Length: 231
Ligand SMILES: *Cc1c(COP(=O)(O)O)cnc(C)c1O
Image (cartoon, rainbow, N blue to C red; front, side, top):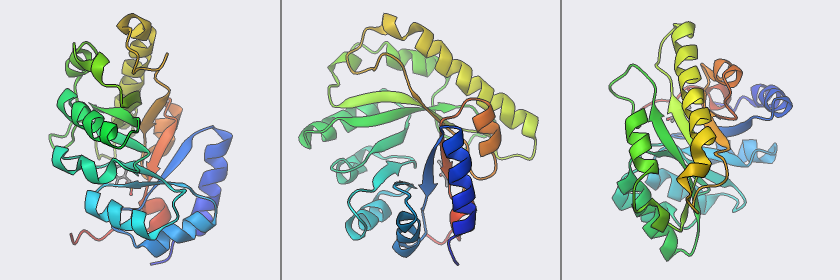
């Protein structure tokens, strides 16, 4: 299957005009597909599986910014800590603390997004508003010097119902705005003055996500074609 280079060019032009960052989601696709988009100028790629990400990191140009967008297991953080650019799916303080520990070993500060649960599907990961609040007020959060919480990430329900998708993204944006409204009161050195990154939207729903305030979209099948799940 060929990379959809024409779709890529159109997408990038559109996203640039809206100041939205594209993360090209390349999971289960060969390194050669990534190289093809790289040659067109794409530098941000997203992967879901640690081992696959590490293999691709070895093979491909070192100026690629790798986003980890999958469900991260604590015992695998060490493999991506040396190079990962942004982790999108932090869903507990425990995981954040483990990222901090591995980042410290690498003498790095790793950028993280907190994943918020906005869908009506049991299978999706993420924190609810209360868990998010608990995390921001965790007494040990100030001690994590090797992570930086840069924003939030969420996935809408897989549905044809556009109103529902819009409602879910709008909800995430309101959580994002609410935290930014209060962020100075948290007084944490590992938080920037405001959360700047809002990662929401995939191939099927990125237009709605952008209308609702997303500034990072994670797009796979639109660029690389559909995936065959034979892991
Ligand atoms: C696979 C994946 C995407 C990309 O999905 P497409 O529908 O192929 O664009 C985006 N975000 C996450 C978290 C994913 O796992």
